[in-house]
Image 1 (cartoon, rainbow, N blue to C red):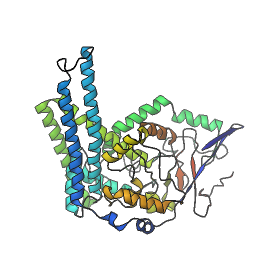
Image 2: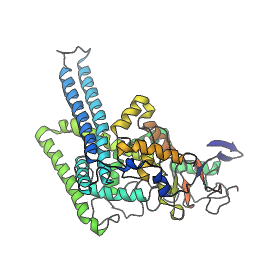
Image 3: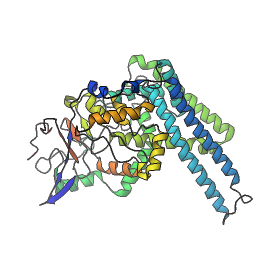
Length: 439
């Protein structure tokens, strides 16, 4: 996006997003048939591996902890032993949380029936894994399926739904001072929007951090970042919530029972062993899991490159392709990128494929994703985003402030009202909802 300020007006040269006109049959036909095979035994081996790494991390941390004392190691100050021990257990929390996110991903695959050919096995394993990580399995599984059916749909998607101009109480669009597509904005409007939205570096950092730490429980408990047409108080524990059907009642209750058992286990552990042990061994990794979950999913579905659709232009293939693959931790170098992908089973790196066919297990997703991208090459849509990490969350948070109330294909605008992309259809006619884009 090239910015050209001139005569009190900022004009940008936008990139073009070619709205795909492709069927799901064409997308699926690009994937080798064997990639759709699911194996309970092979999937279970990944659970065993994740648990092995977590157990090994615990054993290593507890052993090294016994060596941090004056008799074993000489440090220049008594406080250095405390800092050394704090560093050790912080590393344990990070590493355990990363591989526990892998367990979360396998539970997520169970919700998509990608773990095995058996629905009973899928839902049993998924309920156990997700309940152990504080997730109401069936309740989330149901709303997540709705998310997959309507990804990028402004009134049907379930999560990461953009705020519109009117949602934020911003001044109505003034076509004389700014255009609908966000390519031209007057200095007066830029200042007005900036003052309304705010975009200070410190504010963006704090808001991003709050989002990463509290975003997941806030979504489950109060529908934060969810579909705003749902009434206040919507949550994943009420079987009468609007996103559930009457036949979901027992499944929602069962999800709540799993969370009740999870709380009981934590409180019993605290009672028996003390809060500090529970905090050090479980709660810190648990917070890391929540952090990675929000970071990964936020970056998969939020970027100035990605469109959002209203009903007249939405199709399932368009929604499935309105996401990005990213190398998790790839901004920290190739080794960390490999670790991020390995620990979380490629959920960030193969996400477009996951939306095209969510029943493909992660161990087949790499091959399937490569084949799918060969088919997508040349269509004019982005598939690779910048590597996923804190820096990218900060950038995306600053650039993605709101979308317009008008238009059937819309892109995020920043705090100045400028958009990075505009939509064109395959015949190269602009998608402008009847607005003359050159005026």
